[in-house]
Length: 232
Image (cartoon, rainbow, N blue to C red; front, side):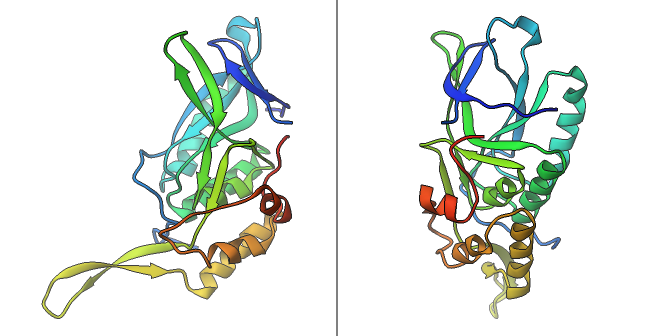
């Protein structure tokens, strides 16, 4: 696989042009209910017919099975010789440990990630690439990519990690209590970020954000913490 540079625009059935100027506990960085992460191929190029180069679109919530599902997907399609090392990521979050594992896989494969999503234009039977979102646990997956791109209107958001733990009350009622990551676990995430060339201040900032809220990173924060830029 090899990298390419792109620009964002309309993507037809054939052409796609872009503009781009530890842990076993089910820790999550919180996310809205969404379908598990799914992968698909997206053609790009002009007048290339069935030989168009392809990139991977990844959309949905990061689940425990996501890292292996991604490897399986790549293994199935890499032999075509048309697959480029670029993933379009659009995710509300999910399992943070799985996100780190997926991020490590992206780095091992030398893949670039762009926060964007693909949507259909039913009227013209076309596809469009538009700005996407990468919230919560998704940010840890994004960290792993060799190159990380945020389109001008894409949204990357962080907040504190947590999990739900079952407890039994004195009246014998079972309840779910929110539990936050202890300092050793936060330190592991910081070590991962540092290994990926990301400022550990990003992890520390995330741990100060109410888990019921999302802090959308500004362009200045993306640059300061070396998380993403506007182009490959």
